[in-house]
Every structure is written in structure tokens, then in C-alpha cells.
Image 1 (cartoon, rainbow, N blue to C red):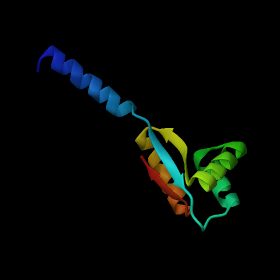
Image 2: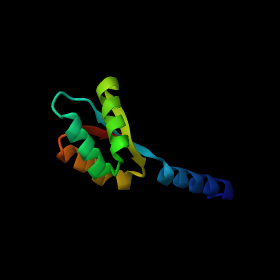
Image 3: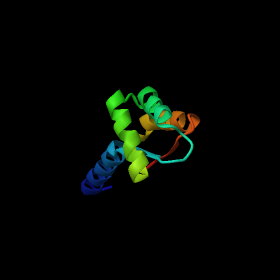
Image 4: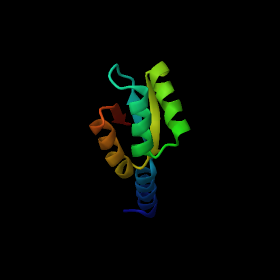
Length: 91
């Protein structure tokens, strides 16, 4: 492997490990505002104001990014959101 190829591989590895993923929560007809707010505070460590704003964005826009970060850190939060009955995905 040439020095140029090695450098390119190192850059690609750094990009792959630092890419931020997002947890997106989607609107549904099941969960109440209070449940969504309480869940975002508990799981995503949102302030009450952040959680309320996210719940309103979900309600009016159909979805909201509630957390960004490295995939390994988001997976447990994503799982907890699903267990709480919220509709979510990691992108």
C-alpha cells in the first residue's frame, strides 16, 4: 500500500467513526404529548423545554431529530424510545 493509499484509508476510517447519526421520532396517533415529553426527558436527557419543543415539531411536521451522535451511543437510547412505544429510527 502506498503512502497516499494509506493516508486515504486513515481519512476514510476517521470519517466513518466520527459521522453523526440521528434519532428521528415520528408522529403517531397513540402517544400523548406528556408521554413523549417525559420519555425524551428520561431517555435523551432533554430539558423540559427541549422535550416540549420536539413534541410540538413531531406533531406539526410529522417528525423531529431528537438526538445526534455516534451510532454506538444512540443505539441504547433508540431502543428505550421504542420500548416506550415511540415510533423512531436511526439515520
